[in-house]
Length: 215
Image 1 (tube, rainbow, N blue to C red):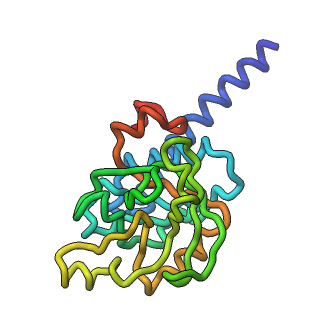
Image 2 (cartoon, helix red, strand yellow):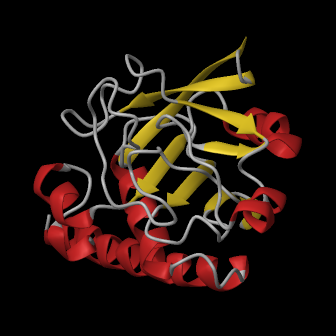
């Protein structure tokens, strides 16, 4: 019995160390300075907690960054590489260049934060789009009712920034460049995790996936 307890203890410590070491290695392998290491770690921690089958890929949107920077990252965790690194819009009532206000309310035209699961695709007024299901009650669980989807748009591009001084804004959806939206959606559809980082002061009071130290 003592040997069994000792073995379990050693295995737990080893697993914990390996996980931490792997996360450090992953960040180095991704070699993308624009991806904040702390944000990556939050996303991975939440991914380990969320009950889903597709954990081989994760999408991170960092709304603490300027809209004029690339702040959406799709990571293939099996191949340990970033497959998309691009621009993404936020809601028009969330802010101008920087995202400041977030909401879970219908008709707020603001973005939401936290963990989402990708769902089904469809052809709508914005073309090929993908529904998102918010996983956090009171934080983003109204995503379906608000029609929060990932879709392509001409205003989510570098050329739009060059012309107008900032990225265009949506009604709350994470809009991405139209030229790559179909490939991006197809790579993450059907039950992978999207972590949207932002508004940490309010988020940490409600989320069940991350504790205060991890924020």
